[in-house]
Amino acid sequence: MVLKHKFSKMLPGQSLHSDTFRKMLIKHLRRGYFVTHPKICIYYPLIINAKRKCIENFHQYFFNLPPDNDYIKWTVGKAMYMADGTALKQKQALDENGFYSDIISSSAVCTIICDSIQFDEHTRRFNYFGTQIIKRRTRDLKRSMLTTGSVENVPRTQNNPHGLMITNWRTLENKDLDY
Image (cartoon, rainbow, N blue to C red; front, side, top):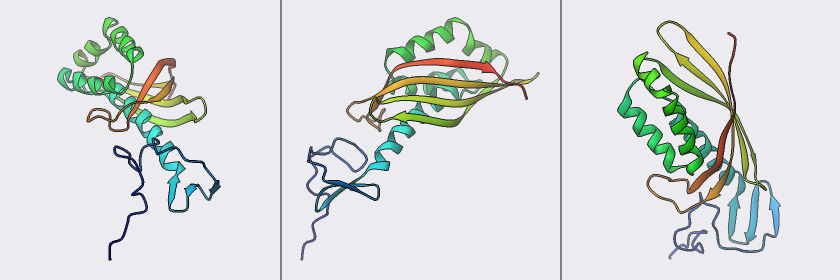
């Protein structure tokens, strides 16, 4: 007896973690599942979590920086695969202001902690709230970080496994916090 998998009706290149399923009429929502066909259910929170994880990964790659020039180039390069030219402009602005060279010369370690991500599914816009910690030999600096942008679907690649691109990304707030 051959058993068919309940997701055998997906088109090639589709997976459970993408939102590019074959277009079907959505009949109703039942306990977090979109029931589109008697044998096919799409777990909606899985789609939202993938988008949040993509946004969080981008910020981790862009803002977690040790005092190692090669590693900084590698992580920021990975972040550039996940965003459009707006992120490249911010990277170039940081480079021109000497941010990366200051990290290396002062042996500082930058980390970012995600506080929350607000994501609007209809407009596909997000707000990322985080705390950036810059540890130097002389003192530690804590900053609040607020960035905003949009998310677009793109084909999945090895460098962009979520198949999402961050567009119109900009920093709205980056201010010092008191301990």
